[in-house]
Length: 312
Image 1: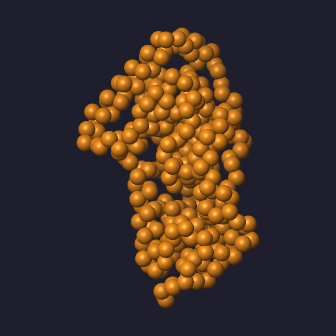
Image 2: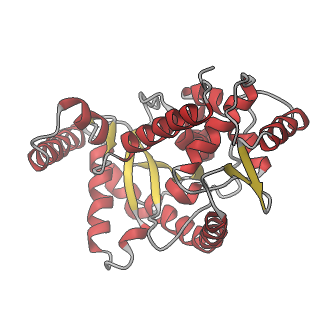
Image 3: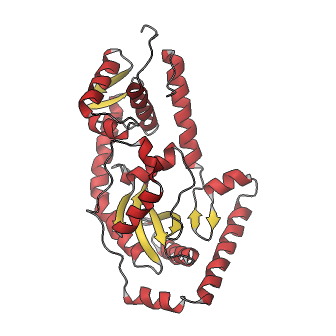
């Protein structure tokens, strides 16, 4: 292949960046998806012409209706289609568990995240949930859900991975990067659509990365349930004792995690085990950092191979 020596247009750069991000997951994209996931505001006809140009120049490729980098092969398409089928089968299960979660004390809003929110599920996948709680009760809420999780049979634990909690009085997500932006863009609201909308409005910076993507609708969403047991526990823990107990659970969990990972530096611990009164983030394998690093590696390798810059 001849070395490419011309400059790329801004839409072409964003097309390549989007493909290289999803290359990490071996997930080729349809043109419609690529249009929605590319960080350039453009009409679809013009966008498709830019894609055609890159394909004709043998910079990217299209196979069976899926666009990808040249490194990907047809097995990725088979894998993707199988994962899409798995997601369709698992969505009702995820909705069922999200409504179970919503019945716990102090839960206000539930969203699906992780691979299922990107329409993918296989035998290695979990069902991930993003949960918004009442103020000053996040750690009580989390403790109830974790106790329930520990009582589940081992075969069902993968159906309930509640790794990210925030409280409704602080909806701002501080991590402004491609990974967090993608997660926000793909969240599927399942409980309390108005609060999901507030979350999106508070973090609308992510739209810069997805200017063509429509906001998720409320088709899978229900109002926050308030069964009798939930209401009763919330009543019992409504006063100062509830505030004190929440703080004690925060302190206990933070110390436990710090003891479990004594060699982790403060910056990594903050990113992977953020523990404050209004947020609980537990990503023990450093997944966010890994994805950002892998994406950067993909970008650099691509620039080196074709001898041009992807910087905007």
